[in-house]
Amino acid sequence: MATHHRRHHHRPSYLAVSLLLPFLLVTLTAGDPFGQSCDTNFNYTANSSYQANMKNLSTTLPKTISSSQKLFATSMIGAVPDVVYALALCRGDTNASTCESCVATAFQDAQELCAFNRGATLFYDPCLLRYSYRNFLAFINGGGDEFIILKPMRNVSTSGNKYQATVAVLDNSNEVLILLNTQNVSAPSKVFDAAVGVLVNATADYAAKADNPRKFGSGVAGFQTFDGQNPRIYGLAQCTPDMAPADCRTCLADVIQAGSKYFSGSQGGRIIGVRCNYRYELYNFLAGSPLLQLPEPDVRAPAPATGGGEFLGHSLQFKNLT
Ligand SMILES: *[C@@H]1O[C@H](CO)[C@@H](O)[C@H](O)[C@H]1NC(C)=O
Ligand SMILES: *[C@@H]1O[C@H](CO)[C@@H](O)[C@H](O)[C@H]1NC(C)=O
Ligand SMILES: *[C@@H]1O[C@H](CO)[C@@H](O)[C@H](O)[C@H]1NC(C)=O
Ligand SMILES: *[C@@H]1O[C@H](CO)[C@@H](O)[C@H](O)[C@H]1NC(C)=O
Ligand SMILES: *[C@@H]1O[C@H](CO)[C@@H](O)[C@H](O)[C@H]1NC(C)=O
Ligand SMILES: *[C@@H]1O[C@H](CO)[C@@H](O)[C@H](O)[C@H]1NC(C)=O
Ligand SMILES: *[C@@H]1O[C@H](CO)[C@@H](O)[C@H](O)[C@H]1NC(C)=O
Image (cartoon, rainbow, N blue to C red):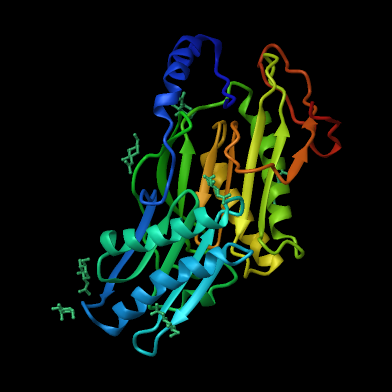
């Protein structure tokens, strides 16, 4: 059961919502992208070489990625002027079959949503796909791929949580999709944000490690609220596995910094770019065990007048998770 915590005066509505939960659960599958970008500047025609290359990719790439240990694949197919560049990435905690079917469906969806466009980018929960006639694969350092004009498809609802979808342009001019969990925490947001920051940074460090071929990290951290609740924060961070450790960490630092502007006090949030993405929630959205377990940071007792606590910063005392 997901851990939620709300202010006491919200409890009646929370109970009402939780009774409905089983019926509201939406399994995010491919076939339901939550962000897309069609490059309408350059199109192909029926029966063209470009279409043949696309057809080839749509059958070969899902197989290539599902047989890759890294759940990641890139491809360059065809001859000038009909070369197609493609990149697919699955969440590091999905399995090969979920990954394969997500990427296969992404190609199908792209043929509908971006019919005859030479470039498309689609974001799903388990995977993402980008293809183009432009060699965006060259932007391996995570910046410079400014040819995506993302459109948020819908405000996502999953595990009883609602997310507001928007897009943002980062300083490196890349566009990213932002999914903001619309529920706020009842803990003082500064303290909660700091705990999220520690977890998210730790998963980002883990993802970017040189000896981590999947460039994926996940983690859980304990958190003590002042009304005695003890929820856990779950997080993940991921880069495309072809990125160098430092580039991966920079890419993640950029999205995490963008996230801190949108997600302060929010129970969860997610930012997805082609090259890197991260997420945190107060419920366990991970498939499988978190790779990192962070102990619960000690927070200074709240001053009753403000109700605010302070994070002890770098001299944190950690308690063990129970
Ligand atoms: C490409 O197709 C789209 C429709 O998907 C259309 O809006 C656009 O104008 C076309 N672009 C060009 C350059 O013809
Ligand atoms: C494409 O090829 C199919 C099968 O060969 C044919 O039926 C169709 O008319 C062709 N379309 C165009 C636009 O050439
Ligand atoms: C795709 O292209 C590759 C290389 O060009 C070729 O070997 C393969 O047979 C093609 N596969 C399909 C399904 O068209
Ligand atoms: C892969 O994951 C999906 C979704 O979590 C699950 O339904 C499926 O059984 C898994 N398949 C394998 C082969 O483990
Ligand atoms: C999501 O919700 C916000 C606020 O309710 C709304 O402004 C926006 O249009 C919605 N976005 C989509 C893609 O439905
Ligand atoms: C959460 O906090 C934000 C910013 O303070 C506010 O705009 C929003 O309405 C709050 N959401 C809920 C569900 O209380
Ligand atoms: C997380 O790392 C960034 C640098 O990437 C740093 O600015 C920030 O203070 C860190 N946050 C926490 C809570 O450690």
